[in-house]
Image (cartoon, rainbow, N blue to C red; front, side, top):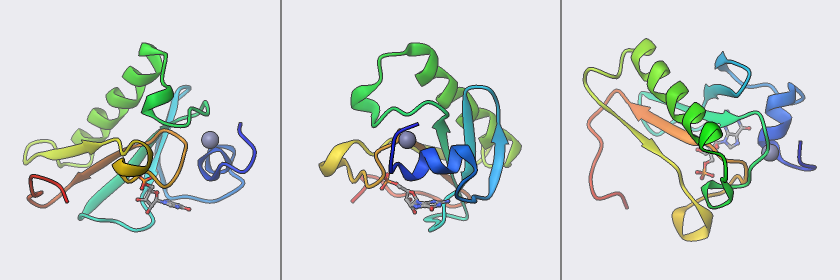
Length: 113
Ligand code: 5GP
Ligand code: ZN
């Protein structure tokens, strides 16, 4: 747990979130400002600031496995979805606790803005 990290406070339950799944490695919850009909975040319980700081294949894999499993259970897998890891300033990262955005339920544009 990192001091003053918003997502660590969501992991601990200190700040509420609309949780949709959790296991020993990760939790998933709905984004407070959704950019698509389905938009949730998957985060590791362990504090890691960004993808740039990831050293564990296990941690990275657990985040992606939960993203894919929930895309299926949320019903967006057949039509398609996008997993986004905004990383550092130019990547648009605003919360410095690793999180995978999962977006779906509409056609998503490419290239991103
Ligand atoms: P980033 O810009 O760092 O990739 O994404 C951070 C995401 O976290 C944004 O999509 C933002 O809407 C979401 N977010 C920020 N604060 C909260 C919060 O308190 N609760 C939830 N559920 N999502 C949040
Ligand atoms: Zn954190």
